[in-house]
Image 1 (cartoon, one colour):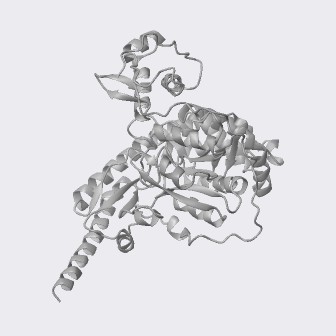
Image 2: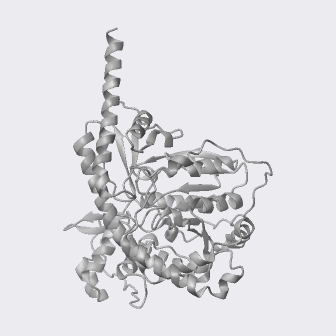
Image 3: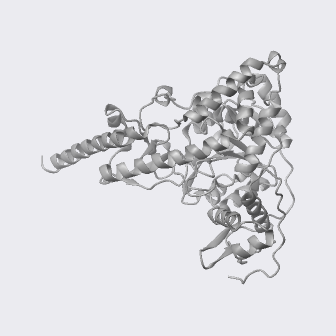
Length: 500
């Protein structure tokens, strides 16, 4: 390790900005690390020293350092100093590739369905189904008040057609929120309001991936993205996921000239791992050299329980190769049906035209309510309250499973997200347990079904965000009973096979 840097650059802090002070310190330091103005192995100043230099509270600088450490920019531990990571790839060199021309789908036939989508199970309200949320009385009261105000005013803007991208007020509110909370770099003009993640993915597929295109997907990964791409005739290259996220080197060996990579970098679905900083930079460098696109699905990253939410990959990409997909259906409630797509400027005209032809525009009244809800700070407050609530739900579920099912399940509490993965012991079948659990009024998803080619693991996905705390222990006990009964039957069958 190198010693402390002798002339640390003065960071620019804008106290009038809506971006939190710790986030400004983090952004300046991470940019200096990526540009190698802070070289690998360099020691950062002590937090107290930097706080005095910037006339900031030490708390803000500590939070920035913790974020840099969490995202892999730095290494070190309390009392031993903070150093710039030495395993980050160098700055990309060479000619910047000419951006490809966005093309539409070339096939006119009806796309074949890739599989059977179980929409009934999606609507099941029993624990521990995925994707469900809670809304407290404070949010409900604010939502009712804002909705009533919009209905009373019914301004002239609702009496005609609007911008296909969504209302300027909502897009401005989203841009400010994303800059402050997700470190996304965009202007309101780059945002397209959608009805959710699947709508955004459909736009991406229609415009960038004609039939026969190649794409990377995570293995295991989100099944609806895989189904949608397969139905569109895209050739998929499943890429294994390990403790550092998507294996970029393996993907480049398998399909170096793929047209796009579909990833969940901040909270990989379903495993929950975070894409390491080294691999994020490798992915961006690949997209740049291969004229490819990165589609970042940032589906539940606000709910991080061990610190501030991790910065989006899109904010790292200075080449404009990343399309950022977000949703309010997880942060608020799935019935809202509002998401958003942040599009690189070079692609914007085609995306706006396609959005217009497919669905004209999003609903106006709902946008007006949402714009006020976000701009007035209610969304950020709601997320903070739900983060605390979901943390408690997670801890309650982990405790119940460890007490009642530790002989069948291995549970590692997730640091982020709205579900956990419980890995099975003793060779039990996750699909068999999922079927048995339904008879005990419990919904769990088998992990093994989310694999394509990678070596699969048997496990269960359990959502913990959308259920009353009082129901969690009881449902965990029912799941334990279902697992125990299956284990007993499996042992009996094995004994009978050995001693007929």
